[in-house]
Image 1 (cartoon, rainbow, N blue to C red):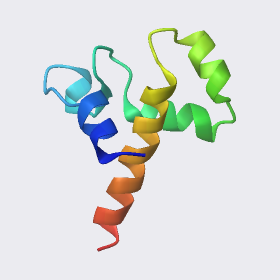
Image 2 (tube, helix red, strand yellow):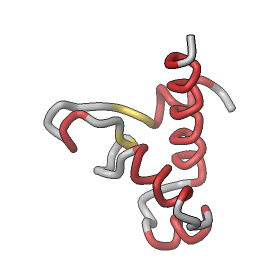
Image 3 (cartoon, one colour):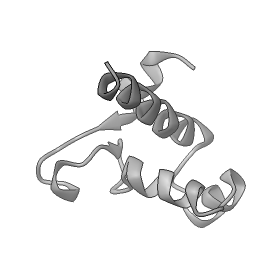
Image 4 (cartoon, rainbow, N blue to C red):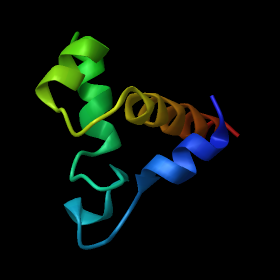
Amino acid sequence: MSADLVSVRVTANPGVRSGQPIIRGTRITVWDILGWLGGGLSESAILRDYPELTPEDIKAALQFAYQLKDKVTQ
Protein backbone atom coordinates (compact mmCIF):
# COMPACT_ATOMS: atom_id res chain seq x y z
CA MET A 1 0.00 0.00 0.00
CA SER A 2 1.24 3.40 -0.89
CA ALA A 3 1.58 6.17 1.66
CA ASP A 4 -0.18 8.31 -0.95
CA LEU A 5 -3.36 6.28 -0.38
CA VAL A 6 -3.73 7.84 3.07
CA SER A 7 -2.92 11.36 1.90
CA VAL A 8 -5.43 11.10 -0.95
CA ARG A 9 -8.28 9.40 0.91
CA VAL A 10 -8.03 10.42 4.59
CA THR A 11 -8.58 13.96 5.78
CA ALA A 12 -9.53 15.83 8.93
CA ASN A 13 -11.62 18.95 9.30
CA PRO A 14 -12.42 20.46 12.71
CA GLY A 15 -16.01 21.04 11.57
CA VAL A 16 -16.64 17.44 10.54
CA ARG A 17 -16.93 14.67 13.16
CA SER A 18 -15.00 16.81 15.66
CA GLY A 19 -11.85 16.75 13.54
CA GLN A 20 -11.46 12.98 13.57
CA PRO A 21 -9.78 11.46 10.51
CA ILE A 22 -12.46 10.73 7.92
CA ILE A 23 -12.62 9.26 4.46
CA ARG A 24 -12.56 12.24 2.12
CA GLY A 25 -15.99 13.21 0.82
CA THR A 26 -17.83 11.29 3.56
CA ARG A 27 -18.54 11.64 7.26
CA ILE A 28 -17.23 8.11 7.87
CA THR A 29 -14.25 8.06 10.23
CA VAL A 30 -11.24 5.81 10.06
CA TRP A 31 -12.33 4.59 13.51
CA ASP A 32 -15.78 3.63 12.16
CA ILE A 33 -14.16 1.41 9.54
CA LEU A 34 -11.70 -0.13 11.98
CA GLY A 35 -14.49 -0.79 14.45
CA TRP A 36 -16.62 -2.52 11.82
CA LEU A 37 -13.70 -4.69 10.74
CA GLY A 38 -12.78 -5.44 14.35
CA GLY A 39 -16.40 -6.32 15.06
CA GLY A 40 -16.34 -8.97 12.38
CA LEU A 41 -17.84 -7.22 9.36
CA SER A 42 -16.18 -8.22 6.12
CA GLU A 43 -14.95 -5.68 3.61
CA SER A 44 -17.72 -6.74 1.23
CA ALA A 45 -20.38 -6.22 3.94
CA ILE A 46 -19.05 -2.73 4.69
CA LEU A 47 -19.02 -1.83 1.00
CA ARG A 48 -22.56 -3.15 0.62
CA ASP A 49 -23.81 -1.19 3.65
CA TYR A 50 -21.87 1.98 2.78
CA PRO A 51 -21.81 2.25 -1.03
CA GLU A 52 -20.03 5.61 -0.83
CA LEU A 53 -16.90 3.72 0.27
CA THR A 54 -14.48 1.92 -2.01
CA PRO A 55 -12.03 -0.90 -1.33
CA GLU A 56 -9.26 1.72 -1.47
CA ASP A 57 -10.97 3.68 1.32
CA ILE A 58 -10.86 0.62 3.56
CA LYS A 59 -7.20 0.05 2.69
CA ALA A 60 -6.48 3.70 3.48
CA ALA A 61 -8.13 3.36 6.91
CA LEU A 62 -6.03 0.29 7.68
CA GLN A 63 -2.87 1.98 6.49
CA PHE A 64 -3.68 5.09 8.55
CA ALA A 65 -3.93 2.91 11.66
CA TYR A 66 -0.68 1.16 10.81
CA GLN A 67 1.11 4.49 10.37
CA LEU A 68 -0.33 5.75 13.66
CA LYS A 69 0.91 2.61 15.42
CA ASP A 70 4.41 3.34 14.13
CA LYS A 71 4.25 6.90 15.51
CA VAL A 72 2.98 5.74 18.91
CA THR A 73 5.63 3.04 19.34
CA GLN A 74 8.58 5.25 18.43
